[in-house]
Image (cartoon, rainbow, N blue to C red; front, side):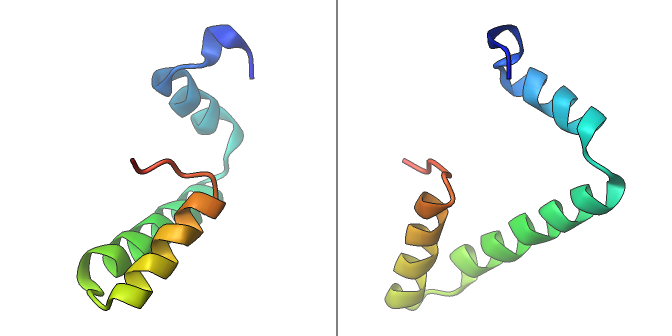
Length: 62
């Protein structure tokens, strides 16, 4: 990725060009499933496991 395209808007545009509709739907479905689990599963061990998974996947949350 070039430095001129290293913004949120640039990343969205790059994803719009490079990803197929099936990949977009799969990614959105995964994000919704993870979000649901983090919001509604209140068991501390499950929450910690999902939190650690997000960090392992490279998602910065704090």
